[in-house]
Image (cartoon, rainbow, N blue to C red; front, side, top):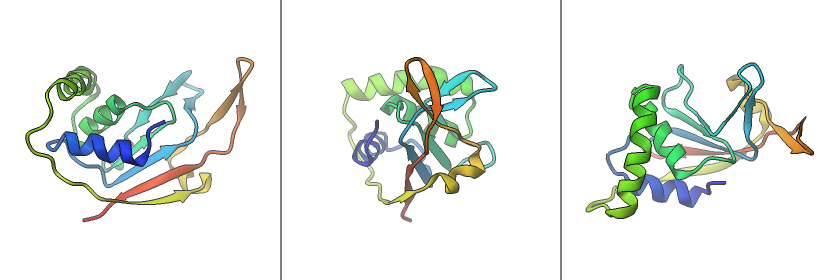
Length: 140
């Protein structure tokens, strides 16, 4: 699970990536039963300034979702995020842009507008789990 420090460090290492206004870090993986998919990160189409990261997210997932914040599609994000992540691991940035976020805990009721559900895995069966999150709001 990415911590708030990991997220800030990743965004500072990539100064030209757009900074999302809100980042939600969830305590569990997100499952969309109708798609039969476990999702690492989301960027709602109606709120492009929002990034939602599941507990299974990696720094590459954050870069992928920031590419969506820049209004680029899934193909571009899928192709660019691994390249950008590996490039920055080998070559450190010349400049870095500091980023500040306010952090607070929120409950699953505040995440209902995104239609997210979380399940705990026990013996290959997913059981409903209370979804908790940390909200990071960018300070202007």
